[in-house]
Image (cartoon, rainbow, N blue to C red; front, top):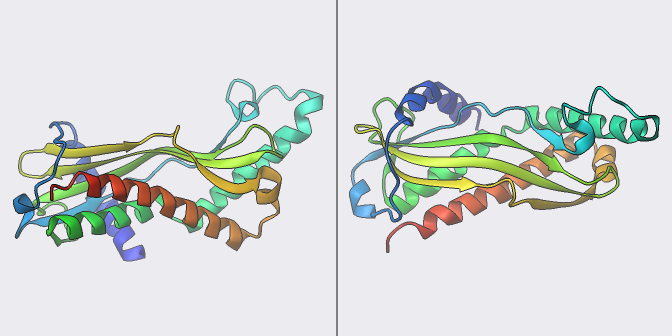
Length: 211
């Protein structure tokens, strides 16, 4: 994974310019990809965060005494989440899973060089984290992410899918439960949640490949 992650980062600047043009197709024809190469890119994602009104920028300076303990717990949980994200490269994991699925489903040859590939699969996470109503309520994992398959020569995006943050994933734990997890267990949970998000994107790609 580390080698792939470095390759994805290296490709990101190139792909950013390519993404400015093109439209998307609803179906992908495998014949179009025979004998062609495909690379991947996954720009660095912003730090994950806990989605709760007490941590919204407009409310954080004010700490009502009755809510101070709740806000402190939520802030601690956010720090735990960000520490886990340093151990689990969520964008790279999702991009790698989708990249291998795309190559297998379309019959394209994988390459690590986005500058020479015929197609580039660009995957970017806009934001992600945990959403909960209170520290003792059930936490859900959310992510806003987008994948595009780019024809490098033309800059055309021939396929695109978006994972909406409204489509959340249950963690099966409350905020308090997560706060008591060991660091390694928290990272394992984040890896599992990212795998579930990747499966949803992979299924979307597979559904758009023509038989």
